Figure 1 (cartoon, helix red, strand yellow):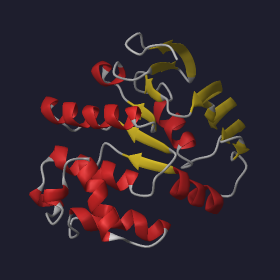
Figure 2: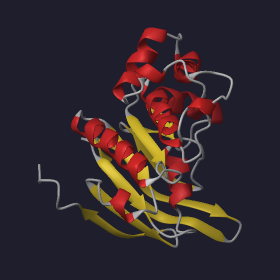
Figure 3: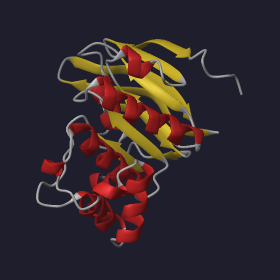
Length: 225
């Protein structure tokens, strides 16, 4: 069943077509990697999928609902309720500890609940670091706090932009193991990355070039059906 669909989506900046008539369908529970060189349109596509920007042309359907013409306020609400974001830069509040940083996402969604935030940290293996400030955590631990923050409101989609870009190999593997577990649990994942090792862990790999989809390949490591 389709979770997200782009229909003939273009994003135009002056004379530049950052995305040019792109169509893409993503199923519920799918793990998709979006790859491509700098300037290929990856960030533009991520911003449109994440409701951070609107297409110049075309439709964006989420659970069958066309959100491409919604107001900025409605898009913000939709993103808050439906999508969990993980960035390359951690965007943690430096004077809040790990569990408080996770609870910030609850504050904008419903009501902060420390028990739920601790459970989210436990899912990424960081419950024992809950009271540590970001400065007391390694880069890998900070990224895991970000994943917990993205999970806290039970989003329909986790959207990660270069989530391992600032991590060493050991911490990259920890983050990928978390993504593998989330995928097995049925979480829908879209990971934007330039790293082949990260992309090749996904169920499906879409490559962009000059605002177009140049390839859309199913990963042979995943069985059909």
